[in-house]
Image (cartoon, rainbow, N blue to C red; front, side, top):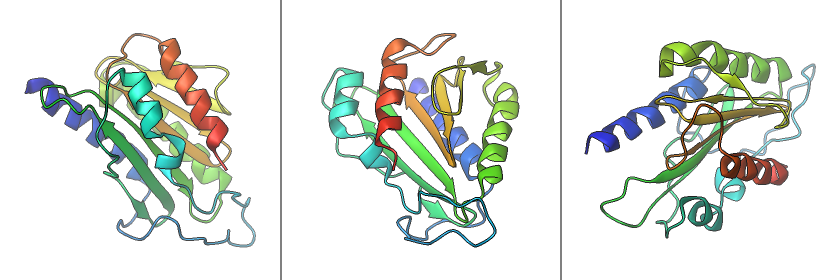
Length: 188
């Protein structure tokens, strides 16, 4: 039970980091909105986290059947935020995997960079360990070990958080890196 609450807290912290720039939640995510003129321009006007992380992916990485997807975090204000979480079907297991994607609503590339940089700078205080740079994923990526075990990636104006509870370590395990590359390949 203690691990369940710790896992819930970790999930909440990841969401708070991504939502720190958001002013409100509950607006539909697939808005189809166009970038405002004068901004860098997002090519991603809508995003579905469950199209990035599928049930097949979740079962493969966790090594067991999973329940249907949940969307614990959805919102739209300064950022379009969408999430997809899968949990193992076993009642006794607390194994989960999730992805959270955020995109600046107005296509402002600098806002995406600032949000990513904020996550890097807050990783020490949020998880008790410094972040580790992970080359070769998107435009920038870092791993947070300790209680986090969270891979964060920025590609263009999209920031992704990827968590697989069954994988831990001081650096991201290869199965997590492989899954991240698959997810990055599915970005619009």
